[in-house]
Length: 67
Image (tube, rainbow, N blue to C red; front, side):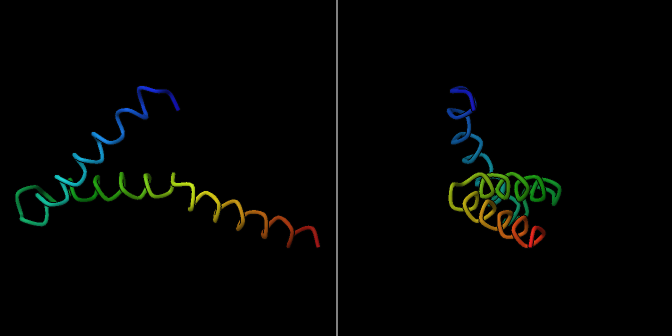
């Protein structure tokens, strides 16, 4: 990732939190909630912990096919 992208992520995360709260209060349409949910899931998927789990799971599938 480039420096610009990494610097922008916290800003977009703050916008996502604001959009989620606004949707919960009924200020924004459900479409915004869906987009916010997708952004949040992508960010969670990008974390080191999830990436380790994905790598471990893919390794198990690969090893099971080669047995």
